[in-house]
Structures are given as C-alpha cells and as structure tokens.
Image 1: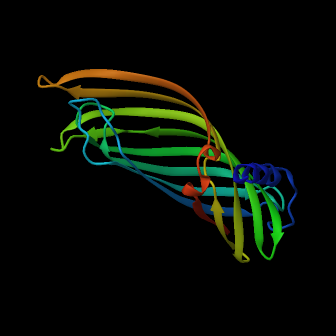
Image 2: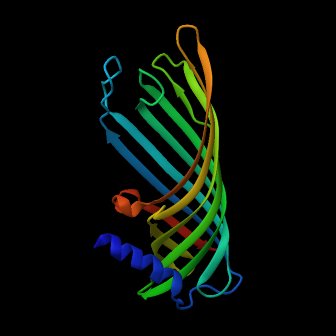
Image 3: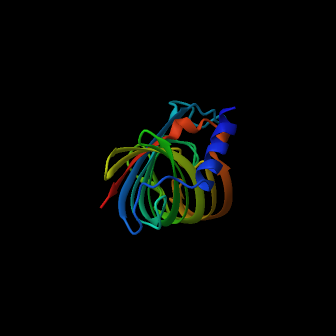
Length: 228
C-alpha cells in the first residue's frame, strides 16, 4: 500500500498546477542533505575472512540554483558531493579493505509545486546529471590495493514536501532516487599478491532502479529553498 501511495504522489505532484508561491523570474538558492547507513554480515568461502560485519556509510550534499518560470515551476542546476565509505569491504580479495569513494555530480532539474494549504507544498522533481568519482581501497596496514575512476550519466524522479517558514524560506523533505535510470562506466587498477601483481578491470553497466523495492523512508533527504 505504501508503494502505491508513493507512486501516486509522484504522478500527482508532477501533473497538477499549484497555487502561486513564486513570482516569474524569482531566483532560488537551495540545498539538500541525505545520509544512508547499512550494516550486514558476509559469509565467505573457506580461507576467506569471515570476521566483522560490513558497514556502509553514504551521503549526498547538493547545492541548487534555480529560476521560477511561473508561480509553481522552477528549473535550475545542481552541484553535488557524494561521499561513500565501507568498513570491511570484501569484494576485491580474501582480506577486508577500507573502501573510500568521493563522488561529484553536476546536473539540471525541473520541479513542479502543488499547494496543500497552511504553508505546506507537495513537489515533484525530475533531473538529469553527470557523475564522476575516484574509488580506492586500503588494507589493514594502510597500503592501497586498488584505485580507479568512474563516470555515469542518468535521470531520476522523486517527490517531496516543502514547508514555507517565511516569505523567502522553505524547508523540504524528499525521497531521493525514487526512480533512477543511469549508465555507468568504470576503470579500476588492482594490486595483489606477494609479487605485487597488477591487473586492470573495466565495467559498463546500465541500471534502472527504484527505492520502492525496499523502504524509501530509509533514505529521506532534508533540504531548503531560499528566494533571493
């Protein structure tokens, strides 16, 4: 039932015309902060490390600059910083690694608002972005065992709620990555073995996903909009 309601909310927010809340050509400065944490146990074949649980931390810090096309529609650009770290990462060999990935993104967005009354607004946003990052992994001694570069391009759609605190300031609550379609490409250099064997792996991947497949409330984003 929750999945159906969230999907209907997205469609509703993108299609309805809102009551006036901006003036045409208003400039809006905005931002969004989201954080996700996950802990899981990993079983490995005999001879592989099977100790501590894996812990993943990821975030999204986005700054937005937009322009009002009319009273309820805004277009603009996004700049994002996307850090990820994984403790006891076990995908690149028999021993766990400390994984780090600093990601960056630039994109454009289109947003529609619908007034709910009492200074609350429903919105739906669609965006397209280009992302790049520099993943790396170190062993327990601090030696770097792999490094690489990645880039991706994609689109995403998500809904949210905005509350107007004052004439020029809004607080927002959104569900990032409700629907995502992206193309991903990576190039990674790995170094293993007593003779420091080095090899390169490449990856091309097309992904279509939705947070409705899990619990979207686990990845809520908090943001703001300031009318300049």
